[in-house]
Image (cartoon, rainbow, N blue to C red; front, side):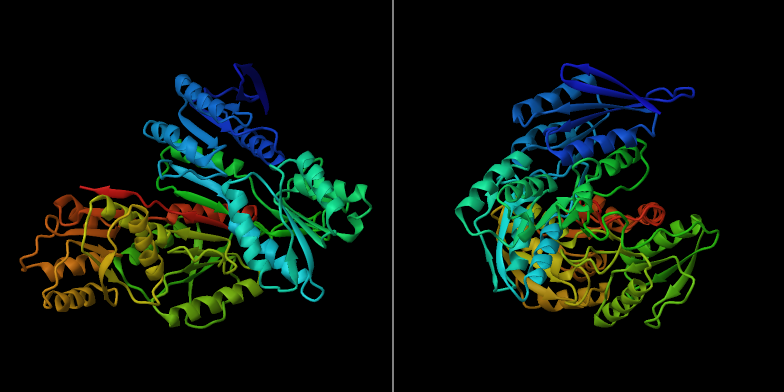
Length: 585
């Protein structure tokens, strides 16, 4: 398979061709890159082109913005004129590009890669877990200098860019745990090797040399090494980078040659962008809102392997998966469970229920875990099984509310909603409606998602300068328990004009409690809920629910597809964060 390449008004048009009979081009995709000077972005574009070449029905147009915001906006407008079916964009500046993407989003799907934008007007975001990269780098440095201590120099990317800010903040938080480490004033090299070489050379000539240099990409780490080599200091400094790219002067080659001591893998997301683009264009069911690609550390000793911690499963006719079901029996949980188990069975998996003991049976190829902890007992059983899976090198697929940032639990996939974002979207809507006396129904403290939704609600209200939560009522999370708790509160005579119900059970418990009272839910009192069942959607249509933050539970297809991919081609852990669209009547 080859590419036909044309250059038209700075747009590179790539049409996949096959030596066999060509399929007609069905979809035209525009790809807008902030620049094609950074190695990581070049690698992303190459990955997009290679993956697109596997699909003859695609035509890809790539535009290089050359680090110019005006040109990137102009490139997107050219794509609109060409009638592209979907836009893939890696923004130069998040805030400034947002109005343009908002306009495009209302016409075609928009996939944002690497650098997020300031609003939710996009179809899908794909990017590395930058906070995790910084965290792992900080932990490595803290361990390396645990006994001796020493100075550490950080080489940053672009000023104000989300990857730079997120990596730097997490890195410094972890390094701060070792009081023997002194952080030198960082240098800003804009992701470029030459800039890093010049700035680090100047710093090394002026200050005492550091024991460790952590650069936010491998190219800058190489520039730092070149500077140290000129002064005869390279052998006395540990050099860490980020990206782990293959090819000439990529991170893997520099590990082989001894230039780098380690790098933290940062997938470009190019392959994923094309695969999800096809799924969106083909309307292949529920797709995630965010795909967050994890990281792993690669050292000189394992740089030749380029394998994940979990090895690929050999082809086998018998595919058996362990399935841990949480004790929750809520409608959302049951829908998720049915979707997951049905999709696995249709894909030929034999399901073995586990969880009554902390030891997994033999013969499993994977473990699926419902991260829907109802209480501490659920969490203990789940964590015991996850630990046993890790000891056996089994991939773990977590479904349910996303775990907290920085908590990967050893899973290969975390698939489900972000409770914080669900609460945040609800809070922003209530603030926009100028609701004054807000009542929050709070789920059990140890239930998965409770804390995140509550924190997100506060954040969303604050972002839109809304009124703070006036009342909070603790519930057991069930319909009956919610109705009872709210009935007791109503008896006190307190008034309110909005209720936040963080689950479907709580939504219907609230409706049960106010039935027969003089409260007019949907009119004088706005009920804001979270869910996706037909019943709660009917309540939205009828006006009983004023606003619903959608939390899809039909995730079996996404689970099945990701399991097949992860077992065939192991890689870094990933989070698939599902939709949190705000629905109103």
